[in-house]
Length: 361
Image 1 (cartoon, rainbow, N blue to C red):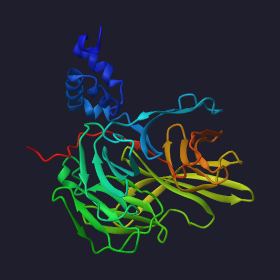
Image 2: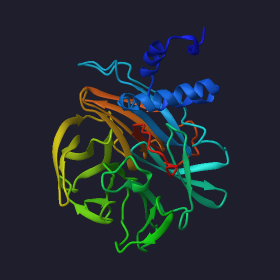
Image 3: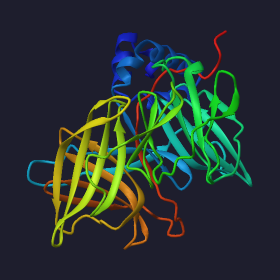
Image 4: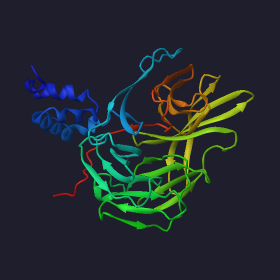
């Protein structure tokens, strides 16, 4: 018996237990699988989207990760696990000659910077639906790009825009998916050392020169905001977002002689002039965590379990490492099998959506 022979209510119950992004694989089995998957996604994606996925850009490919924190108990960190399960989709990894150098997530869409031979291309892809949109970039490989949407209209492709901030000190530029064209902005260039994150259509970064930066895609302007702590005595500062609900700051600091702390800050309210923050939880570390990490460091958190999963390049070991950190200890994962690879990995939370990249018929 195959899944197509089962009653539809039983099929729905089975598919509800599958993450939204994994449903995409069923489309490649056969025509009936493609129809079944599309019908289910259109009908129930709002429920499937509650199951977020963990993705990682590694070795110029996007992978899906299985992160198991179920075995973390009150007094130990026994047997948490991380497994790189598969490449994300055919759309993202269709050619071995194509290298994905950057990826940025916004409302179920991924903006990928792709290096092919000596050329750079941009691709917006919805991994859930398989739709892609190729965009001609403005300049060289070293530029950075982020994706956002205007006027809180996340359902229409016409609201989405791409911000380019160049490697040099030239002006910012923006691309409208609606008009399919680039234009120059009055804003000066942004000096950041993070890839940035998207929250409710706007982009956020930790800055070299300022504490904190954001870009409002509705007003098309930058905002300079303040961190909730001084930068002095900090050995790592990183930014993350979970399910596009809240911003999280990871702050590592020296709190005394040979004593180091990690504090997780969570955003409470965001307006045009400031962000209010509160401390979610704090870890006192005693040498178990590899503090000597190259920036940028990416991370995910589980607020309920008070767990932080960090991903970065270790200076001491000169390899990419994942740490699962709790108040009771730390578990290290060495997944860097290619010692010649010096690209810093990027870990992020993904929630699927049905945003169409094609104009309405």
